Amino acid sequence: MKTQIIDIQNLDAEGLKRLEAPAALIRNGETVVFPTETVYGLGANALDPEAVKKIFIAKGRPGDNPLIVHVSEIEAVDALVTHIPAKAKILMAAFWPGPLTLIMEKSELIPDEVSPGLDTVAVRFPSHDIARAFIEMAGCPVAAPSANLSGRPSPTEGKHVLEDLNGRVAAIILSADGELGLESTVIDMTVDPPVVLRPGDVTLAELRSVLGEVLVSSNVTRNILPDKVRSPGMKYTHYSPKGELVVVKGKPAEICQKIKSGVDNFHENPMKIGILASDETMETYRKGIILSLGSCDNPKEMARNLFSRLRTFDELGVEKIYAEDIPLNNETLALVNRLYKAAGYTFI
Ligand code: AMP
Ligand code: MG
Image (cartoon, rainbow, N blue to C red):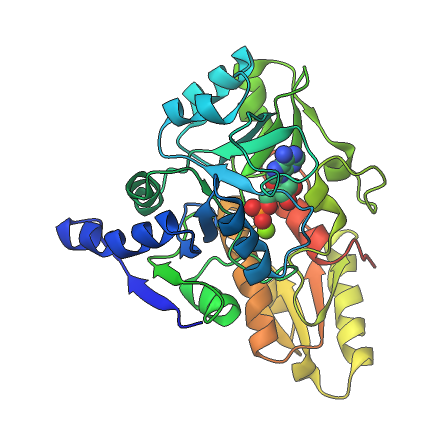
């Protein structure tokens, strides 16, 4: 398939005009990659089962892994769900548009392909100006998972999308890099208290500040393989670089020591070994490909860089990656969750 590449840096008159062609492709049942404030999304008309199937084919995504439906206004949600719980309305008022996805009971408008075998649908209203204008112009809700090949790190830069999906989708809208770098927070509103199924930029503390009690799926908080699958996406390999990634735990000095001996012992060629460190620790290493996630004092910066760094190790042909563990707190929960999943919960 020949993929149309559309570059839009600003949403001025020229930028809006450039959105017309990809919006028409969505209406015609085709797939289009578009930027959002979290990661790039691979979109199709959420109400068209044949179009939705194309998303799964383009990504190589397991057919039972449900998709998030994106809207460009709160009013569009009414038709997609049986009812909007009062607490969901509170969250929409507080955090939309933004990186928060709400799970609600789905209406008959939602084809089975969007959330196969489930009575629910995930809905999000993104804040990215191009995403909003694009969905509005398309004139329909847009189902969109992250625009990566299934299992690969989510795409935070245009070049990641091109690597994975050029030739596999009808069009790709490229823009400046996403500001957040991790996928949205997913919260199940069909239960009370609501349960966070996937942490993201909207933190637990922020959710609790407006809702009171909010639970977190044990799949998120435990550093072990998920035992009970609540969010269907959780059972699949995720975010994986090509090299073998392990998370190194311990006190700071221990982490450093373990990584150094790992580098000494793993391979005769240190350039085959990657170290995912921080601005504060990277100077302590001498051998290997040493990349910083950012400053430990800036978890948002680290979150924004994670997927991009994993892909950089791939580009450099790294076979084994040691990632320093990241202390868990409200601000780092999403980052730690993605790092551990990318490592397949492998720790030393
Ligand atoms: P992605 O858009 O690729 O980040 O994936 C969307 C994720 O949202 C899935 O992997 C699920 O974990 C979650 N999700 C989407 N729809 C539902 C749903 N109806 N129930 C539970 N989780 C969902
Ligand atoms: Mg994804």
